[in-house]
Each structure stands twice: as C-alpha cells, then as structure tokens.
Image 1 (tube, rainbow, N blue to C red):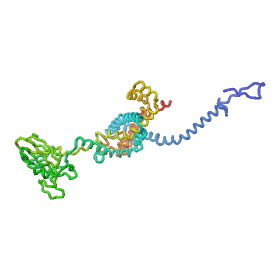
Image 2: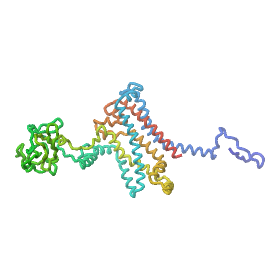
Image 3: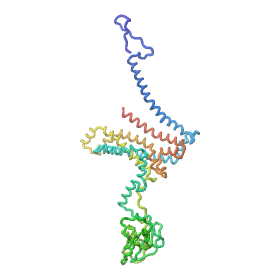
Image 4: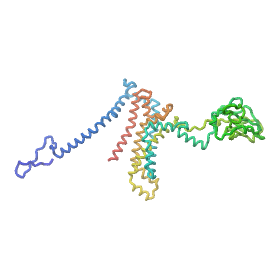
Length: 467
C-alpha cells in the first residue's frame, strides 16, 4: 500500500505515512475497496437473476434424480428396502436385455448415419442455387412433434398398399417387372370335376387325349377383380380342337344378375386371362400354356395318350403385397428411418454453419495445387470440420439414448417388444402395466449413467472451443 502524506505534523516539507488499518484491509473509499464492493454487487445481482433458474433446476432436475436413485433401492410398493435387487433383476429380465441391445443398435447406427448425411448434404447445398429453400425443406420436420411424426410414419409403413406409401411404391415397382396375375379367391364350383392338390393346385379328375376340349369353370372371382383385357369366353369355348391339339377355356362360371347354367359357358361369362395351364401325364408336365384374354388355351405337339389338365398353385397365389415394414425383422430399421427424416435437417444446419466458418483460402490453395473435389473433401473439409462433427455426433448419441415417442407410436402392439428401447422399457415397467416403479427407477438410473459420459464429453469440448 502506498504511503499517504499527512499534513500538519512533523517538520515543514516532511510527509508522514498514514497508520496501517486494523485487519490489513483497504481504506474505505479507496480504489481497491470500491473494486471489491463492485465485484460483490455484481455477484449478488447475478445470484438474484440465477436464483429462479436454480430453484427450477433443483425442483425439476436435481430432486427427481435424487428421488429416482433412492426409489431404485425399494420394492414395487416403495415400502421395503431391497438394496441392489432391482439392478440385479434388471439384467435378468429378457425384455430389458432386448431393450439394451436395441438401444445399442440405435447408438451405433443412427448418429453415424445422421452425421454422414448432414455432412454430405451440407457440402452439396453449397453448390446449388436455392440453398436456403433446400435447407428450409430439410429442416422443416424438426418443427413437427415426435407424436405427429410417429403417426405419419405409422401410415407410411402400413402393409396395405392402398394406405401405405412405401408399399404402394414397392408394389408398383414390382408389378412393373413382374405383374401379379393370380386369382387368390378363385375355386371350382364343386369338386366333381377338379380336385385340389396339397400344394393348392387343381387337376381334372378325368383325363383327355389330343383332339379334345377341356373347359375349366371357376367361381369366386369378383367382376371388379377381372383384368381389363378379359373378354367373353363363349366363342373360344365353341371352337373345335384341331388335329393333335388339346384345348379349352378357363372362365368365370357365373353370370352377373343370374340366368346362367353351371358348367356351361354362357354369353355374358368372361374368360380368365394369364392363367397357367399344364398338361400332365403321370408325374411329368408334358405341356404348358397361358390363357389368352378370352381364357382360351391350347397344347400342340402332344404325343398320343391321355393327359390330365392342371391349374398350378401359382394361379391362386396372393398378389405381391409389399414389404412388412412393421414386422419383427424390420421394425427397428423402420423407426430409425423415421428418426433420420426428422433429424437430418438439424445435422445439416449445424455442419453447414461450421462449413461456412471454414477458411476458404485453404480450399482455393488446394484447388490451385490440382486437388480434385473428392480429395479436398476427404483431406481438408472433413479434418477441419472434425470438432463440429464430434459435437453433432455426441449430441445425437445423447438424443437417441432417450428415444421413446417414435418407438411407442410406430411399433404395433405385437412387435413392440422387438423394437423396445431403454426409455420405453422404463415406462412400460413403471406405468405401462408393470407397476414396478422400483425396477423402473433402476432403469432410469441406468439410462442416466449411460447418458452422463456423453454429456461430460460434450461440455468439455464446448469449453475447449471457447478457450
């Protein structure tokens, strides 16, 4: 502390030091004292502003965490202390183990795919004219709640092609290359003429030789399911068989409005096109034909002898109905697909922000040195964006660990266990019928312990980036 001259004492022109203040503190009104008071005032103001947030944080975060940890050591009723029994039971339960496996799949697959998609889209977006509109469209799903997104994708994944968009596309593509022509509801009117085989085929009881006509009448085909090219079968049924030819028609033995005679091809009755017909001799298929638009078929070049006429089972197979997206095998990838639709815009925008802050002179120097775009992307863009990619990846890891809404809404009841994750298992055990909040609390603690390392990693990375 500097010496302060005191006037009125000692010899003229002499200065005397002020006596030291008890306690060694600064004198009231001095510069250090004023600074200390200002610092205390700032801390007090900051504490006053932070107090409501701290109270909310304690009430909504700290207290629930402490209560959940304590509750995990009690039984389902919450009255008997069971120690670590809930944690042991948690790892003995097959449903919990299934949830842990599915959560592992989510953590491994979803963040990596999202980070990769976001990186690729962010780089490509810089090269298109309408970049802002493109980013807006991709980011728009973030404005939709997980509940609404789950309902949307539950319809998108419907098995019925008339409702499910994906199966409508799958069926359309399939039928373009392999059109389904089966008649799954067709059957003989009686079993006196045709017998049904164990594989679903129909074979004539009586045999016929070349030069004869064998007409096969079926029922059970609604008029609206007849192909548009189907024509009346009466004329074809009356045509005589040429020499050495076995022929006939396959038709719908039913006259709309009544009046027809069973077993006879009436004028208003149509043939069944695209039906496969086989001429069978013993166990050997001697000939194969496909019916025309009027249902007519013919076998030529058959050797002399007797043949049975058979309609193979493929004629009565169900048409291609698409992919079973909501089945046990594909339910988890299907839900991850819905998650990607929601969060891809988020990853793209964050990575795009990092890309915009990247020094352009490095890229231009690489181009001037002869590097192509792939080399620039792999050796310059990705390394420079590594901190941003790390933040995006870890943020998404934390997010997928807590995924609940999409799994609960999209997965149908019978396959919900196949899509189960830790957050959903915690809810099911606690409130969804299990009514064991002790075990549910243990699952909550496990989920917290799995999320905390990723949170600490993210916080440290943020601090390093700010320093």
